[in-house]
Amino acid sequence: MWGSYCENVLEKRAPFRQVHLDNIKAMYESGRLLTIGPTQDLTKVFAVYVAPDIAEARQLVEADLYWQNGIWTDYEIHEWIQVY
Image (tube, rainbow, N blue to C red; front, side, top):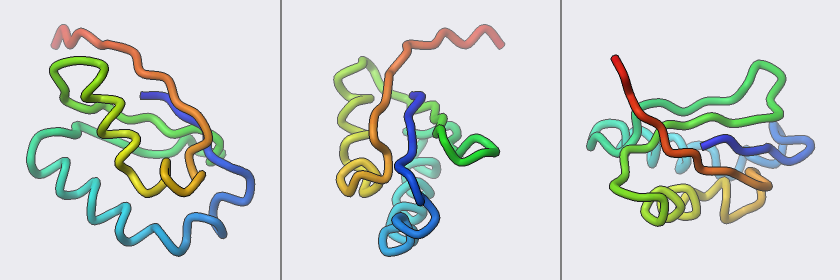
């Protein structure tokens, strides 16, 4: 998943940050998330979710408080084939 952050992301994410971090930790530990994080300039977010199809990947993204509260303003899902 590639997505975009809202303007003033550091301030706007503050009320949701701990729950967001707890959620992504749980997804990582359960094997539903391989990695997630922002670009250095805090304009984009990148994540690799483990899902059987795009519909479930979208559900994982849209269940995140950052999506629900406008911290992520858009996203694209791209299926990925792991070679190694």
